[in-house]
Length: 78
Image (cartoon, rainbow, N blue to C red; front, side, top):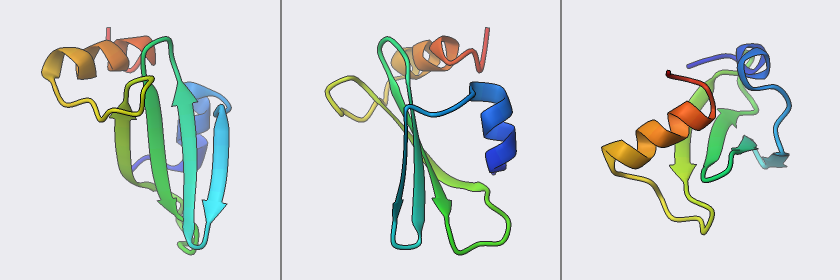
């Protein structure tokens, strides 16, 4: 639910931004992870509506250990 401005202040500029219809996507890369943030472009309040963490081979991360590692790489937790 973070706003686009808040995301930029936390993570800086994304490695990729893309618009596809009403979907606006930002991608941030770390050494081992890819963070995808999805927004509804049509909304007046640009807030993250969905996110995914994936590995370098596009596999969805689903274990607590790999998710925590990604959060650390993006400096979202200590």
